[in-house]
Image 1 (cartoon, helix red, strand yellow):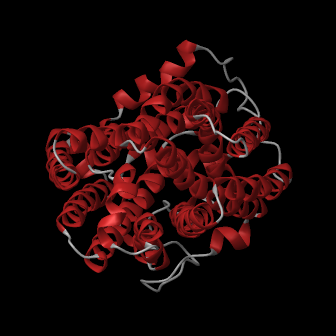
Image 2: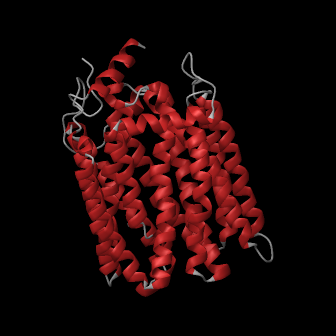
Length: 432
């Protein structure tokens, strides 16, 4: 008997801890997505560390590093909405392949620029904007294709595996990228990142075609903003977007890591700071079987976001590398739990004909928040201090997420065992 993605179904694992591997065993396409995502995340997250490191080398400015988020925000908004509309109107596999080619070209530009005698800072900003545009076009299709290739009762497991894939890559990528950039130079890492695309493109080529649903409208601004109307009509979904956005806007101190690392007087401190959040997320995902037994997803999302904010504030207070790492590990674990429940709730309750557009909105919530968060943390740090920026952001995050739970009670009351939207999507999947 089929159940929702967050309930224990027939054949589902009964252990409370561990990682549920059923989607990898049962879906060839999910295996391809998993491998491509794992390898791609290593490359992308390494470059995510190396670009600000190179910019710090060239400028020595906190604000210059923070502005990376500012140049990415507009492309993410525009192309995130467009990518969501395209995901509901064209073959998702084809769109993924085209955008992956653009991302490869961007990495090659970074490599070429870093090999110059005098690398240009403007190239880093342009590549950041182009990469954000391609990511905005690609990510909704990657997210929306998962419910098509994974059984409905395995969606929670697929969400945990997706978070695990991201966190594992986000540990290996920053440590490797940061170490290579410091020891050899940014060019060495950009060359390695470019090589990872050989794996991702091959994996995406093996995916089955994923055409638009019959009767889908042609992509347009009206269609793109139709997803906004659907989200506004479902306050439970709207709450998940706003909670995640608030958490990242107020409590995302990653742009400050290159400037905070020297206080710990260790050459490996920068890599460890970048790895702290994904290490916590990895631990959370490796013990995530319990998430399949939770039915009130909204409450879990809010609780995890509040814990994230408090842990980030604790990181700001810390004066030793050990305490700082512990705080970041707790924050990363809380963020991973929030992500698992958000993805499960989205995939289990959003119909396929609007899934791409809603994935575009989801991209905006979890991508624009960090970009604006980098800018906010840099501006506050410039006006006050590094410590004040981190601590105040963590406190504001916890307070704003708790307030959203009060203002949007349907999110707090969401119950996957009784929700009408979950039942609708389950019946559509069964009919298909």
